[in-house]
Image (tube, rainbow over all chains, first blue to last red):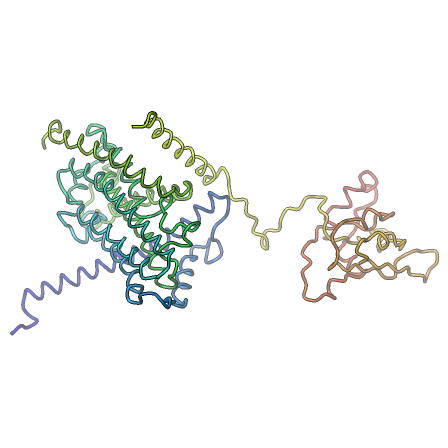
Length: 354
Length: 170
């Protein structure tokens, strides 16, 4: 007979409560972050086009995205007559859940990883490529040619860009000798010169891997200039043409949550994770304040990269589908392979042993 | 491998950086937004902006300078101006009735050009929205109220055209 006061169950329930608390904290972070990033995107694009951007709702328009979200919540939830109702309803969840699950392994700060997996990098690339299933399901279930075309484009784009992403991620993994994100970050401790990207004493081809991960990552999370699957000028709105209300909001949420994921991965692998650029600015702290300050550095670095992504997004025109494929298969893939082989040779023969 | 492929690769990166430079310049403080927040911030109108024609008051006599010759009425292509001479005092020519139906006005300015005493001047007023058609017919009192006052005479003698246009609607 099983009673609830078994010590194993007690530990398990405490563990479950801990996990739930961490999940809720991350969810709140994602929601707040996405609301602000959408607002920032509109401000940045407005300023680049010499406009003012949202400035009506709340002081300086800061509540604009909250108002938009509330509007989407109360809109009519339309399911097309010929759509596959189950898949149509599930597709936004298929897109959002992977985008949310990725946050489990990201080290936000000292002792601030939700799940410190020893194969964090594999988990990351596996989960982040699951999102496209939701996109294909959405395109298929909508029973609409534009949605389906967008979904097909998404699938081909994901297959094309998953390889360069993996090849680029392999380089810092090889240099660190570990698949754990925590371990990779821990090896970048110290000042700015021990971050992977700026470690000039180490392997000089790291910046190429950084650039490849940036380009291929932009393509993988489907934002401009690689947002072919929701190309308004060609496909109405791509895979989310038929979606409205809260389901559409979930797609939107996932898209912007992924842009934070990309910057978080770049920061973790190349820009020293949660370490301060100068050791004295928080590197010596431990305990609660150490976690808080390092999380601040992490989010700050991610924010710079997110701004860079918004800048690129509002600058470059959308590429054609053949250009997209050429870039991946003819440029990024060979460059990534060469980079990986050279890095492997460096690790095997010339890298000083630890 | 295509010849010149490395040049292409370098050029593509250079062009991306060039594009980013352009948008960064627009993004930066060097070039702010050009948006006018219209209802809060009124637009800066040019000095000789031709808004609604009005009849400013002459500060010396306390009424408009119109002599009711009817030139504006005859010139108006739309026929929206009505001037009736006030015949109460034969030695003093002044309008008894002066209406402009601004709803049909096309702001050509011919009435202002034809005025022999330059009493009809363009104002800076362009916010003429109202709820009924009748409200858009402005009579003498309304035109004088909207016109304000002419500037004092001695300044006017030097540059009559320029000075008259100084915010006659205030």
